[in-house]
Amino acid sequence: MDCPRVAIFDLDDTLAESFQPPSASMVVKLSALLEKVPVAILSAAGFPRIEADFLHKLTDSPRIDFFYIFPNSSAQCFIHENGKWKSAYDFLLSAEQRQAIRTALDESVRETNLELNPKYEPVILDRDVQIAYAALGLDASEEDKRAWDPDKAKRKRLKESLDKRLPDFEVLIGGKTTMDITHKGINKAYGVRWLSKKLSIPASEMLYVGDAFYEGGNDTVVIPTGIRTRAVSGPAETETVIDELLNFCA
Ligand SMILES: [Mg+2]
Image 1 (cartoon, rainbow, N blue to C red):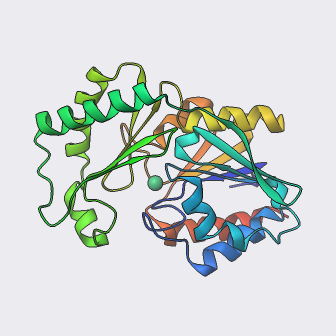
Image 2: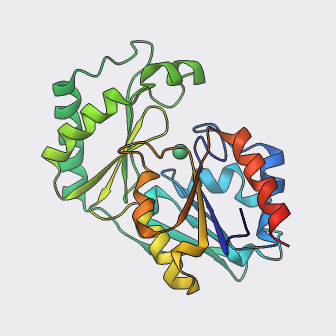
């Protein structure tokens, strides 16, 4: 691997376990990498969680203005300017669109007989630009999350059903138990193309590191942009990838 001109990371199950903050050593490594190349995070997570979990630990970096955050599956972008995080764009869903998505979710969950874990209540997270469905809620143990849909078969069924009901929206499988729904065409590929244009760097000279490169996975969609990709099994492997990058990026 040589040094990419931009390093982009997925968050959940790449930089951190799903819905958990990244480890202290991961934050130190990201900060070191930011000294060398622009860094971006493309995540299905919302901005408040990303900010509270670790962004505040990076804002002292002299290169923080080269750190790009694309929350909600790239439905938004935040850039640090003059000491503050500022929105660069966002693709809001209207009240009617959000209602249509909730209705479709209710119907499709029923139709596909998802075999939910009775220990947990599913949760719908409405973040204005994205609706996320967490099949085991937010507090399930890592073990239960991992056991629920290991081959993604349940969520592939759910996606197929939702795609029929919501042809004007993007339906993506992410993490271990979640589905994310945004405007059609708004997914991580949109974020990659936007950043490529913003920095005038071809996608082929950037690197994307993520865990969900399976069919229908929320990282798979970046492949057609021509970006180089690296699949990881989780945060431990991501740390070794960043170590390699720190070696290659002088
Ligand atoms: Mg992920």
